[in-house]
Amino acid sequence: MYGIDETHDASLRSWVDSANEAQTDFPIQNLPIGVFRRAGSQDTFRPGVAIGDQVVDLLAARDAGVLKGEAAEALQGCESGELNRFMAQGRAARLALRHALSAALRSGSPQQAALQPCLLRQADVEHALPCRVGDYTDFYTGIHHATAVGKLFRPDNPLLPNYKWVPIGYHGRSSSLGVSGQVFVRPQGQTKGAGDTPEFGPSKRLDYELEVGAFIGTGNPLGTPVGMEQAEDHLFGLVLLNDWSARDLQAWEYQPLGPFLAKNFASTISPWIVTMEALAPFRAPWTRAEGDPQPLPYLDSPANRRQGAVDMALEVWLRTPAMAAAGQPAERLMQSNFRDAYWSLAQMVAHHSVNGCNLQPGDLLGSGTQSGPEEGQGGSLLELTHGGQKPVRLANGETRTFLADGDTVILRAHCQRDGFRRIGFGDCAGTVLPAGKR
Ligand code: CA
Image (cartoon, rainbow, N blue to C red):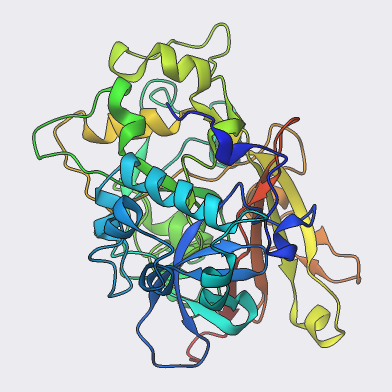
């Protein structure tokens, strides 16, 4: 697993003042990576690391001599704005970059003068997907989501018999993945009609799904499964993922092969990948409730039992057009924790590859919707509104059963534990436009 070292020391401070603020998502202990360019420019995207409200331009830092040796070599092949080559190198390259940046950014560093000109304000940049995502797979590890949604369809038998044995998933589509700030048109398609024929038109039950996305670092050759003991070595880091879903399209199309057009019109991720190293202090035991089946041996390991879960607080926020017009901030709809996932990240990797399927650097694995165990902790509107029966009431008097045109949904997350600095993920925001408008 991932060790804790001096880069996690809670007393570390940065000469970037905003990185020392208590509520920043990006203290010097985080150092998440993404790609950026000056907002509105036609520049090539470049690799960068978030620190406070700034971005470190990594290529500029390399050219300025701040990143040397292994840390400089780690960036080779990433000049085009795709991090796949860096991701493929695995943990050693990430550690080299993390240690070099931690040293250069801390208070009193002799490198401050050389690194200072390599910083830009986050407010002045825009992002792209951090890598070429060859394949995107969406799992279904949120048992509270699976149960709540199952209840809507099968009140007496919400969980299907395979759920507690198989990490359920399906192959999604990577071409419609976008980064925070993504705007997309309301999808249209077939929905079940009143009689024997379907209706056609814009989705009336457009929803979000609160998920965690895991990026694969090192891949595995076709035909060579990744065992549980090695599974974490293949993970690069985590982002937030909104798996936008058209519930009415989904209900009509999902049998017998599962989700298709209800899910592949847009999926939004947060711009900064929080590395597995940054998450090391926030790992938690993975447990299986008494009376539930224990996992098959290929999905079990002592390390996974010890710290296979991630203690990561998750939130969904909504900003309606009326709130935006009135200058009101977004309103929080719910909170849950990734710790409650039924299957761990390592189990997702081990299961995905057990048949010999090859994972590649930059592949994205979605966790499935992460709902909490309590009422009001649904990770989608489908759950919060009980299938559209019980509207959510907002502070300004508006209500929602499903998303309205112009709505912006923002996912947020942070990790917090006594003795360590709080780290966050930044916003994962997306906005729905009216059908047919672009
Ligand atoms: Ca999903």
